[in-house]
Image 1 (cartoon, rainbow, N blue to C red):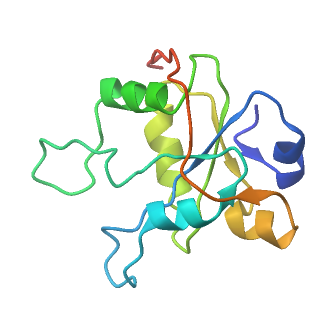
Image 2: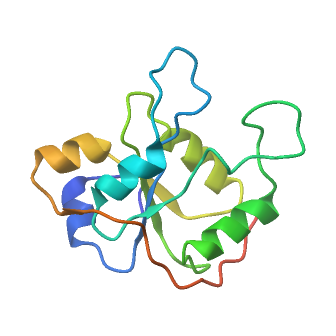
Length: 146
């Protein structure tokens, strides 16, 4: 899978895990937002919420510190990822936080791509969106540290 995929490609893709990587809590100067609530109001059909706000090293005194590979793997299993599952990331904000998620997941050896244009382009093209929390059976993802 290429590192950047089009909305057209994603709309026709099978067996791809789509993750909303919208992240807002530590961006100074941004108006307050609740990315989980926004996800539950509207997201790409079949997507799951990555929750970058909590995908951090909680033992670090610094904000937004890189999580351990074990924590990344645990989160991906919870979201239903299997080791060979290709993942596509998007975000729904002006800060393009899916790029951070791409970097974090690559550290665990994940085959991951960014959705070109994100949620803004997806919606502008009238592509399928749904509401509600994500539902996922746990996966068997195992990290492959590059």
